Length: 539
Figure 1 (tube, rainbow, N blue to C red):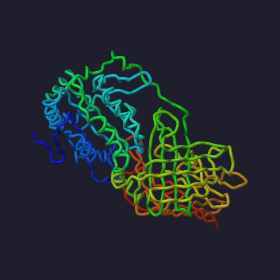
Figure 2 (figure 1 turned 90 degrees about the vertical axis):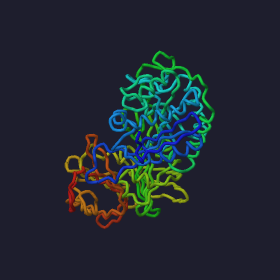
Figure 3 (figure 1 turned 120 degrees about the vertical axis):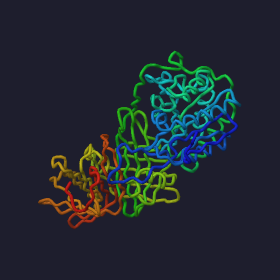
Figure 4 (figure 1 turned 45 degrees about the horizontal axis):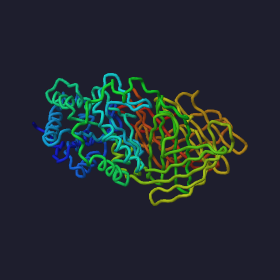
């Protein structure tokens, strides 16, 4: 059996085999023509797998370098077609374990790119209020007593350190093409897969996948806590009789479809730039789908430095550790958790590269937004509070906008959004698109809000078709508005149809007639594959 140099394997003395199928890296992305459905490799899973193996005296199979976009070792169809050696290597490692132990335990280490210290266990099922739901066509990958002997102790040990462990919340490992489904009593048309099925049928094999949030993989306190929890839960040998595989007839399983858990849906947003503190902020909560709420906290920290949190929660409500609360007419934003800090936000044009270059830091954010006028969906007012990022402490006191994201046009439209504070209770919020009827502008003052006549924003570009260098809006009867970006964070946002929108965020300096202000911008352009150029565009 020939094994590529980018895949390593080691032997251990325990009954554990740890596998990192997505520990590789992809080449740099061509931002003008990225491939459709580009996936991110599971950064730091190779290192974490080796670390856990040393603590647990476990065997390993680790992909150190192969890009999952070229070969996905977690997809049965790709493994059987392009890398049967991988399956044979797993069988050889398990066979060596079973010579010494009555039962082998296989843990696949994956990454979940949320900023929360969460672990989702994949065993083929989804946990519901009535038990484990087994999706159609799926099989359980662990035996019945394994839940109580291994997984419940792991959940308890993790919870004691602040780590949440769910079962199938986002990644149940139930799809027939998920490699974990080969570790069940059914087998694919392959000799190695048949060996796995035989062992599972005899109660000698248990397998699961661990989907680990960013704080649990990056070097730091959270990863140390995870390693301690796993070590405490898996150090003792499993009993020799772990029971038969779970089936739909077992009382722990439910064949009913799980109901979405929607508890107090929240949609809220806050954004501002404080020139005295040199801090810009985009923060928001909102639906990612029918049963998932997403949260984001993006901080601009001067020059090109940023810090970012993204998280999600099944159901409505808050996305801990990010929280929005309305109290006495004011909106309170709290965040106490981990952020990814990056020195140059422009790297985010390649998400995987940005993740790999970011460091994990602790942060505390306490802000209170007071609207100038109640009752409007989109509001302007003042924000006050403090933030700490690692050893940096800053005081915030400036003008701010709440729920300005309601202006954002959906889909893959070209659009520009500008939000500026001119001091003394004056603010300007506008959206400009290629479709005049979708453009709008709102002027805020202590006397109230005024809807301005729509006018296009002319965007001068900096070296390509996407990077804004200057914004200008001129309309009859209103002062000219000009804005100069001071920082840039470009990203590629998938459209859902194989294409992308290139979006650039950042801090900008504004001139509105004789007034000078500061604020934020967001400029989105559908990606035109392979086209290069510079100039100006109206949106």
